[in-house]
Amino acid sequence: MSCIFCKIIAGEIPSKTIHENEDFLAFHDINPQAPVHALVIPKAHVVDFREMSGEMMAKMTPFIQETAKKLGIYEEGFRIVNNIGTNGGQEVFHIHFHLIGGAKLKWGNFL
Ligand code: AMP
Figure 1: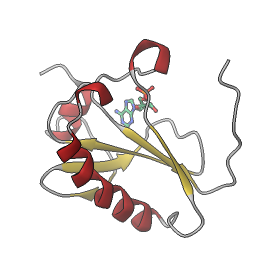
Figure 2: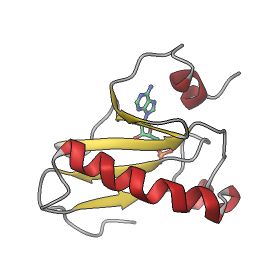
Figure 3: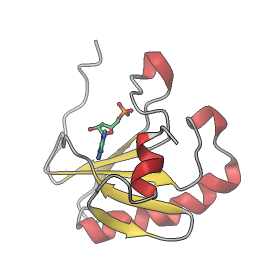
Figure 4: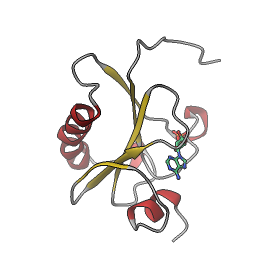
């Protein structure tokens, strides 16, 4: 098993868990880009959004909402980012949704 996020799910690499159920795991990003920066991943190895089923997305929605509440960013708002493939800037090829918040976020600087 070579996927770094599969290793986190298996407990082979340490991470700081925020929220977990049988299908998903939320943990703190190791290189936070804002005061709050978490990652939400499915426990099943899905490479990216292009392989994500609608059924899994539907299950992930309440999990992300619960995670944002646990992080204390739900009320004031936050950003969900999902990078897809080379042009999307994806670096880890196990789908993950970034939850970013804890401050008023700016927009832009994509190039
Ligand atoms: P992306 O560029 O969308 O693929 O984002 C990958 C994210 O995974 C980056 O924000 C990294 O900081 C984060 N990351 C990589 N390795 C770890 C790790 N071991 N624990 C937590 N976050 C990680």
